[in-house]
Image 1 (cartoon, rainbow, N blue to C red):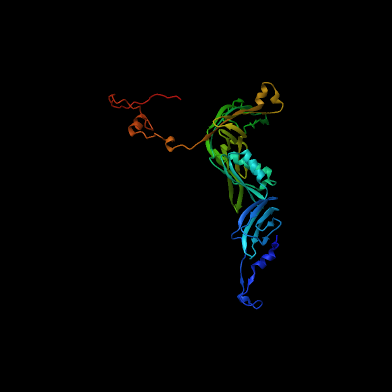
Image 2: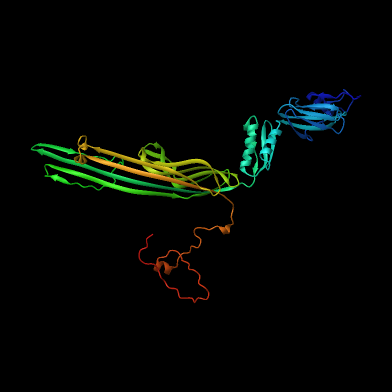
Length: 474
């Protein structure tokens, strides 16, 4: 074509392009008169993203003479005409390309970033989430998801698709902004009933028999090992015989029936995807270690939680559908299994726990029932041989019996909630006013009682003090 061949220079050629401009005669210039000029730099370079094995065509404003590629392994430049160049991506990385004209001046500089080909990933996300504005960009060897999503489930879906299509799913960064994140209020009712029946019956015999200088003394003490101690200190001690020969029987007969009712109705609100927790109970001290200096010992105390606790994580899937991970626990202090260590008694915890993940509509209820536990303990202690004798064997043994029944029900109701105006909220003390001194002294009232407003045409009657009397049974 009559044009001078275009050469591709290496990095050394760029150093030559910088040049040393001399002001004196050639070969006679002194170092103090030489000036270094930068012929090409990244200051005005244009950023060009490129995929592996992909190419981009660059049209130049004037004829190109030289081209410099910093790292040909990352990207290569091919010149087919004086004003058109082809940039081809080789491997993941970054490099830059400079084009020079016949006078050695920079025409343009390109900052090339070669990443994986993400068009397939973009198409998959667009097909799965057509209404979402999610952008996929490459960063080094990883992928960054940006843009906007209408719900957390859309953002999670895009992230799951990217982790499956990218070779190393750990290099996917989810930077999607979720608009309109829903808030979920969880109303929980925890109801538990415990019924206990305890029975104890024991007879301890003590006496002595003898004649002359010989005397035989016997004593039986039958414990109550199931409870660990008698329920009551009440006892009957009948004595038979004369002071020399006598038998004393200690009778302990106790029975106890008890019921325990536990009810908690916590309400919690959390943003979709976040966790919330609740505890209605307390903390009890536990001695973890004891440090002694001389004769002075200082215990180290930790506190453990007990009571009714709730932890839940809601995720709004679609409008009105909620995925709910729920952990609820009911615990109480117990003397059974208590630990005595270094003079300190550490109580045990009786715990009932439920852990589940369900999908439920807003306003629907889930009942976790069937957590029924029945425990029966019975132990008989006595004198071997004599305790097996019918009827009379009762005099030589003791019986300790426990029957404990527990039933726990947890009812969960999630709601998708919105913010409300302050005027639509009420407090527990709304309308509370202390009663006047005459009403408190004469009628025993603690708060003011408001009556129904009377019609305007009804004559006003003089108020008088009139209170309740007798017994009021709830």
